Length: 379
Ligand code: CAA
Image (cartoon, rainbow, N blue to C red; front, side, top):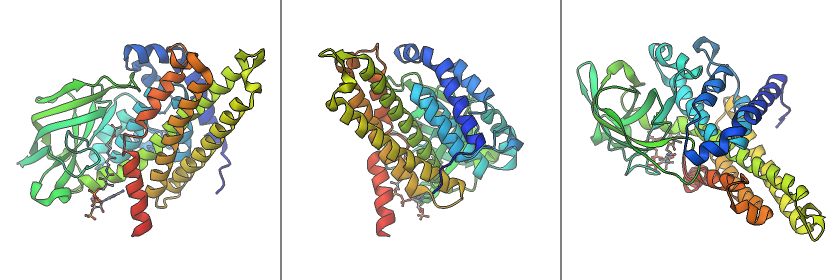
């Protein structure tokens, strides 16, 4: 493995770092407190090419590789994991899904605006009874001539309240189970389509997470992505890439926690010495740095396999499993190093912990990642 970054990748990382420090950092805590969506930042991220990083130029994207994407994801999430997940869902789940499996007409109609940040996308797979058990879809899409009638509820949908375009998985033939699920591009504002509930969350509070309700929503047949019955494969294949994005988000939170812990331990004095001089603190920092580096290698490995067009689903699961664990661990240690100050809102490490936890849950829980990894070992 050679992870020497090329000039473009280094430039992307630098641009993302500068943007995160200048545009996201000053308002991240406030937006978290007020649960405010980062509208302006997302627009600017679109202008920078960060909302459609891997989309080809033909559809308005930045035509970059997955390595560039994860470098940018890490930098954004190091400062603001909420902006990170908005970016990740739009890039890896929505843009990638449409570009890889959509029709030419769908790409022309939707991808350009999604890739340039003019429009925002969401990915609606989860339901009240279909989380880890993703194939258990209750939402139905019944064909009626040149359209489908969509009915059901989707749960925990990132970007759901602000998305212009939602990729919805729905059963087109219940008798076929997982093989009877299809994917549809659903536009905001269609009659019968509504946001049912906005969730109040522990972390990533400035991103929106909602339930979506569909009541006899008419979806034109041309908005079906791929053949009928392709929906579960579409969703799981798309999530393989999504998991690399979330792993990079977790890596960013872990690195942000480590950076904050180093800074604080050099400034804070106890017993007349900066606490960084004590081995108890040094050993924590050393363990955090080692874990962050190991997570980074797994994330880079998964991204690099994807770029080389080799199988990456197991590598993505390993990267997400490990990086999310490291994010939680590093955020906890950063709080411990900050002592009482780590537990209060003024120091952002408590936000890092709240933001880190979700990376062990969404886009497949850690238990699901272990299922994916174990299956590959035992097949
Ligand atoms: N790529 C393509 N196809 C795949 C696949 C993959 N990675 N994994 C499985 N499949 C196929 C299988 O081959 C099978 O098809 P065939 O019957 O034709 O062989 C079909 O999909 C069903 O697979 P399984 O029989 O293995 O299904 P299962 O019920 O045993 O579950 C699972 C597999 C790994 C547990 C899967 O359901 C899973 O990953 N669950 C977690 C779902 C998830 O990540 N949800 C996150 C929600 S989205 C989100 O969080 C977004 C957000 O807003 C942030």
